[in-house]
Structures are given as structure tokens and as C-alpha cells.
Length: 328
Ligand SMILES: [Zn+2]
Image (cartoon, rainbow, N blue to C red):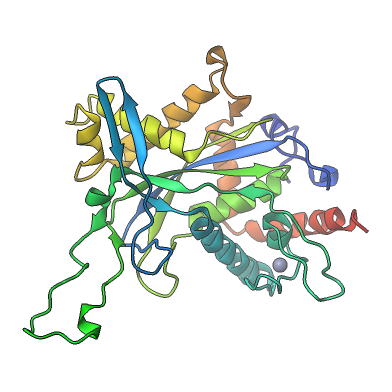
């Protein structure tokens, strides 16, 4: 469907459908994404506190330690997998599940994202995921991105019962940005199109059953080659210093950037792309990756977000099944 004659740039980081192999090779495709919260969101492990880290950023005289909010990798994979399976159900009627030991191991999603072995005699394999996510970090400090209004709100009554003091979970503010890279290893162009479709169309992360957690994923670029892309943390640090140095922001210190009321997603997207490009730059001992032309990414996205995604998935399915059969 996406043959290498038409898209030679994909050959560097993907495998063709008839070359899928159980033995790992070093074909990497990195999708650079800026995740933007469009509503409040809850990303928490204990049900209450936002997940935070302590991160040093900057150098020399302008060096700070801040506490970014985190979007753990499993919050991203869990949501994307659920969405991918729902796309398959809508387009092909594929019935699969998110239950760890109950996945069908017979659909494009299971074979790409991996699935655990089960008691079922047909499913004794454990399929390793070929899609890698990384924990994502906010550009701003927790004090700026986490909404305190919802926390510990004092009640109107003079006397409170035990229930009234139960704390609300921490809410991330709308507008919060998370630079993120999703990496595919030894995936086909069709599988890449599927992941791009999921990334472009999935709008809900975190709490699944509410209006919270609405996210816009800006796909900023695709890079192919023999290496994984940079970690999210390094890119996030880079963007913080680039925001400080940018003429388009009022701030002129790291402190100004990490405590800013908001950052323009378009500017951050531009700076994030520059940060990734800089790390790829071979003259600086960079990564063995090349940026895929935007027209190719547009073609893949168009196929992945339109009616032809059903064709993409159907085309891929036979190859995915043949790939698994190599283990017999
Ligand atoms: Zn499945």
C-alpha cells in the first residue's frame, strides 16, 4: 500500500509487509507529538496526587530545579490501545479486549502493541510490543499546571464530617503541554499509518468515563532510521531553554518559563521540532535518523484518518498473521 518505490524515505525505518521478522532488527520510526490538554485532566497513580518529578534544567547562572507534572507511559499506551481496538471494531468488526490475558492475538493491534500469553491453547505466545512510549513531562512547574481550586476546597459548614474532608484529585489545567515521542520498531508502513491514525484521532487520556482528559495530539514530524529518538525528558528540557531564548516570549529566565501562565502551543511545536532536528543533526554527532518529508506524513495521515484506514488494516492483517506464524 505504501510501497518503497513511492515512499523511499520509509525504507530506512520500516520493514515491508513480507519482511516482517520475529528476530528484532534496527528499523526505527519516531513520531514526534505535542500533547495539549483541552480540558482538565487527572493523571495520578494513587487516585489523588498528580504524578510529579524533580528535574534540573538550564545551566550556568540560569539553572533551576522544577517539579513537572507527568503523564506516565502506561497512561498513553492504555488510552491509545483502547482507541486502536475501538477503531478496528468500527472498521472491521474485530472483537478484541483490553484484558491482559484475554487479547485475541489475531488482530493488527495485538500483534503490533503486544499481548500476554493466556491459558488458551492457541495463545501460548507472548507478543512483544513494537511500539514504545516514554513518560512525558510538562514544560511548567506543578504550581503552574495543577489546578489548586479543586483541592481541599473548604466547605461552607462550620463542622465537617469525615467525608467532607476527602480530597479531590489534582487536576492538570487546560493548555498544559507534554512533548512526546512514540517509537515503532520493525513496523511496516501500514502499521505506522495505524499508529498515526490513533495519535491523530485519539482525544481522551486519563479518566476514561468523563469529560476530563481531552487532549489534542499535534503530530509534528516522523523520523526514520536505525535509532530510537531522544527521550522525552531531554526534549522537554531543550524546549524550556528555547522558550527562554525565544524573542516571542516575554520571559528571559528559566524561572519565567516554568512559572508562566501559559505557553503558545504553536511556538512550542516549532521549538520542539527544532530541538529534535538539532539532535538528529549529524554534524554534531547526532542520531542516525532522517526527517520524513511532510508530504509523506500527510499521505499517511490522510490514509489513516479517512475511509481507507479499513483497507490499510485489512492489508496489514494477513502480514501480521503470517508474522506470528513464523514462531510455529
Ligand atoms: Zn486483538
